[in-house]
Length: 161
Image 1: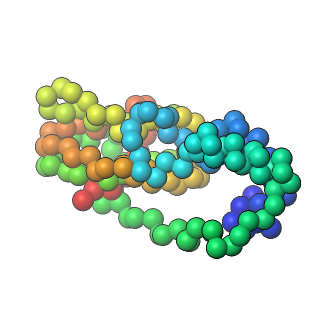
Image 2: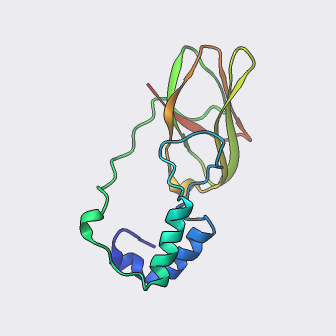
């Protein structure tokens, strides 16, 4: 169902409220607290309450001056997808990760040469149709020799700088 305009979204107001209250909307897939992503669309409790109140208040149309700008086109990844375990060949700054397959639950972790690890992404029931790029709030720098492992096997594209 398209939700771009008020006219498209209004008939779905009660369904939107239900999905938001059950935290299935907006779709995200990443488990909170495992990785820190700058584009996390998860709603705060205040935003969830506001949507519920909007629906209970008859779902009135808002003022068009508060509409967001249209989204920018997605950034193209620098690494091709395919490998499940990758060894970093030189220092790399990872800006984000994009899953490149269908629905799954998976963890992606970087293991550093000193044996410590950095959680990169944990998806739970991710839908491949979302085609989302998970951009980190701050780029993650991995040293040469770090190993990126997706478990279970799951191909990714990495955006690096």
